[in-house]
Length: 181
Image 1 (cartoon, rainbow, N blue to C red):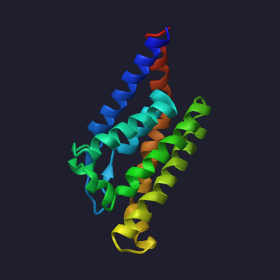
Image 2: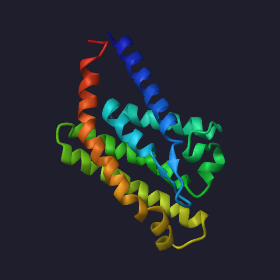
Image 3: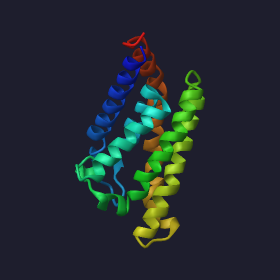
């Protein structure tokens, strides 16, 4: 029944956005760019929902935050967050979702390729974030990399590794519990 499948996907996409709204504000302030759990929640939602609906979940989260609801790091929200020093990361995560989601969808049973796809997705976010941080913070690219990328690499790799290990199990459980079969 196609209608039930559509409703199931919409509900899961809304749940992904809700999980992002819960985990996104939880962050550790270490400077201009905080340690955030947003990318962890995004990668989990990509495993659970696939690229298309996982990306939609992130975009819904982003739109909720842009309306002023404090769902971004350090319980912040509003258009000012997008225009502020970390706005490039918020935009970059859209591309992260698409790239990582494509790898996860295509290579679901190959953990190393899914891991690689998430790393490539994170690298793309690492392009957008520091570029905007450099512009907004009036600093060189090297300075923005030193405060906006280098300190985050070990933690992001750990998050990606955890998701690569548990993501397939989450996908399998959701597939087994489908209400539309």
